Picture 1 (cartoon, helix red, strand yellow):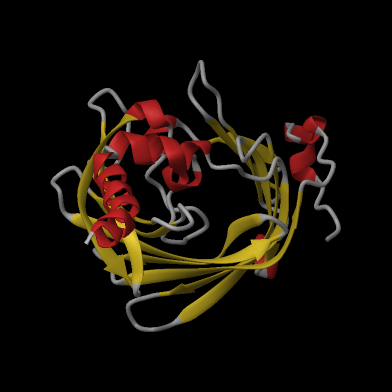
Picture 2: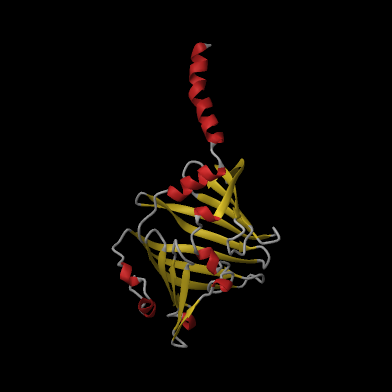
Length: 253
């Protein structure tokens, strides 16, 4: 009997530790998870409307400072080739997104009141491109669940009242084993379900990075499938790249 009790002690302790973690504790672990300093990737976005008609955008992306600086260049469709975006995140002021429109020879700033606009006709908004700041939200732990057979923490992430957001809350399914977000539901200001995101991952060196993201707009019956076709991490990405002048030059893959 004593041997059985001894064998159960570690298991019981691990269960106690697991349930003692608050939503904020889990969110902090997510926030502190090691990420590549820089990423260079080629991305395919397949957009499918309610009539099941699809079109494809092909993009190049370079980022550094763990994703806080990013440039995205449009390669296809041909009509949009050369359009590009510069995204910069700050701790002491509002984030910035600037857009280069070669047809008009203009750089436009995406103002804060346009953060809910669609990015390149996809089901991602400009707000969706930005990182989630830990201090901007309240994290409540819900009952743990399985998602696709994977044991997950479930977090209710509520935007603080002062945050300028098109969303009232998000519900995240987070793998307990890998601390990766597997599913996300996003709700509008009236608590209506707006979007669902499903994530798939692959190992790149020692990092588990997203290889596919399915984004479904529930209100519009529209979906975007995002495939990361090529990815290179921790290459030498000069911080001088993240300037408006770089928007006009598409790099080689």
